[in-house]
Image (tube, rainbow, N blue to C red; front, side):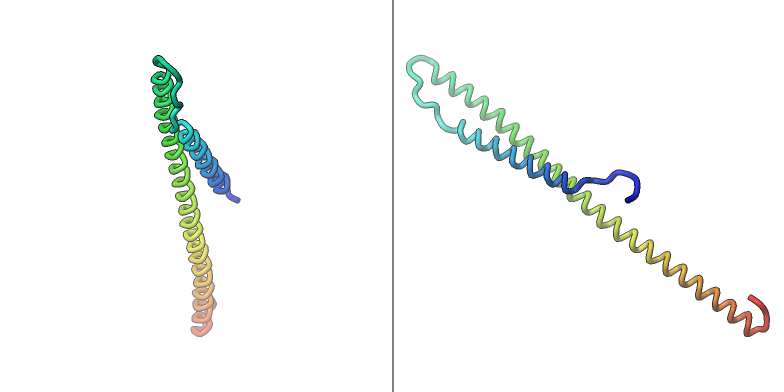
Length: 124
């Protein structure tokens, strides 16, 4: 394999799966927080607990959105790596084929020059 940067496509795909699993876990916690704490008795305790739960829901919702965005960006990077690999492979094959054709043409040209020189009584 040549020198330079090589993307670990399987590793990147695994990270996307891990990010998706993490986002699902956060969604699960959000589902639990979505329930009410019920009546916690007299006073302001119920309101205080509801306020804290709302803050947690908001913060965890933002976290989940960021995890989703990270997964999306990682998935996009993987797609770009794969596309570049395909394009580069196609270009390298075309380049190699062109070189082989050029070498074959040079052999034919050389043979034609030698044949023409022999026909004209000279040496190539």
